Image (cartoon, rainbow, N blue to C red; front, side, top):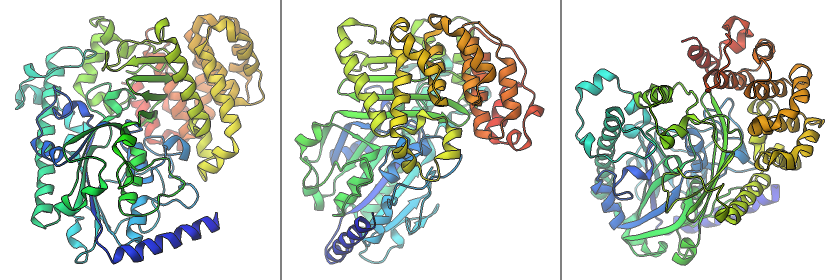
Length: 614
């Protein structure tokens, strides 16, 4: 590793000495918060007009298939700044319980640009889940600008635009009644899974107004570059930091949560570094893991071996190569206090979604999400039985796996996993995703509390040491994808494993099979009362509650009383909320006085308690 680092530094110094003597392109990232590609007419016929971003596309490249790997800010931005898959390096939870170190000698990519002579600025949002390290930014502040660099110094400027953030839709009923939108609510086109109500129409129209406001702000930065005589020496990227923002987007691995707009304005003086002429629409797939490596490559710098992405611009990147890329990996874990574990794989027009805990229905409470009137109204309509089959899916148990044809079903509402005509595609996608998790390896097969205690001082080292164990956990979890009678013996063996996390996943598999797994009641009852691992007891009680074979209250209460980990308590409270809010409810009270003092004060524990005690 030391020799590798010395060699990398030598190459970097050689490149730096050469590049200081020659002109180099500048880079600007203009990043809008919380919007998928569906809100811009440039990408979707029902979106808002964005003339300045459209002008960028005419003078550059529009990417039809650009993806955040995660549907939420801190995870997505950490992926951008590192070029690494978050579940591999331990940065997959929003927001972090602890900051983790980067793999090996890896640094956040602006540090390499800065070391090579670039002036690096961030205005201003970071939200990293990893330790930043030294010398990443020359300046990171509300006033950071390329204008403070030395004369002639190349620069990388990263600027965020909060005008489109989810919080812009946290308006009150009074505001909705008194503040008209510029966009006519009657003219917006709602997704088929959204209720067609005045609330949803107003919310959608208000967001279109925000997108148009964003476009003006993007234009102001372009005008500044033009005024400074820099526009034709600068690659300007515009993209969303992940999908969003109406319900069932931010926080979900559907296309509405992952598929982002991406336009790269190509400067006239550096057109030879683009794989196609200005004005071209690119069909190939790019993901956030690729963005940092792309800038390093454009700057003539080596891409570190530790990253997962690869460049999509540069003199040696051909249009044919770029358009041949047709795969994107997505992941969802914890969002504030709400836990889930979902992975996705898109290949061409097909999208495969694997819900590892499908009983965590999409509409499960997240306090921040439900500040939005549209979320609250959607749940109320569900409770009142006023939704059709498609709109009701958000509040129903998900299938453990889903397959969608995005050309025929762009909103992912028709699951083809049960269609025999697509059996071969389903099998291919299932195996590909399973292998992806094993080879990363995906740390989320362990509960977050276990990772905090045992892995997060060096996540990638932990993953390498436990790769075989993670593969076994993936296989155990995948027992939920086969008829119960075919895998009964394997589930039973996993319930008796000496590895507590095999028992943990075997119980989740039982919960997924539901009453088909009722023969496991004796083993689950024993595990709920006597297993030495607290979270195994919780999963056993959860399974018994799902099939109405046991009262979970005593097990849950005991676990919450005895845990000294706020992270573990939050995970247990996720089960409490789920059992209370699912159609077949379990009623029991959780008094905050039962918690250990340090646990009771934790932010996410308080969020769950405030909701449970409403």
